[in-house]
Length: 204
Image 1 (cartoon, rainbow, N blue to C red):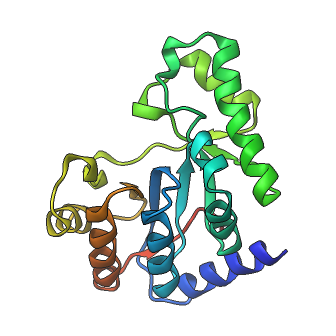
Image 2: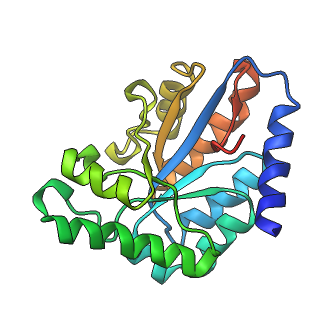
């Protein structure tokens, strides 16, 4: 109940603004014990919801952070257990990669993920069918708002590339494991009011 109320509070703060459209901020590959808490601090400061596509092995190592994500109203998605190339696995292995991660999230938060994202954007019909069977919807991102933060770009470059390409329905891809991502996130959050776009985590 606490998580639901916080999620509603986050959304209401967004919905009350002058919104000409909605975007989603998404973070892959965490949680990271150094940068994810700092990302959460920024999101809380700017009253902004996000979606975190977590890796199962990272979930088990950082349960407190995962619980905080849920408690502060963010959506937690499934990014597989080991971030492997799913089309290279057999059906049983794919099932385990997804199910183990969902189970780990559910044990910590009480809620299993309903969205998933394939590592490296690699998937096929069999992989998607297994995710569908487990009750999860695939959420990718928009190439024009891919931060490419893993390439070592500066925070200013990352934020400029993201903000100038935002439009209604944009899904931004970032990774909560880089220092430059943290710095870029603050610049993005500062610039968002000027775009007329508001952030949602899909819970509307």
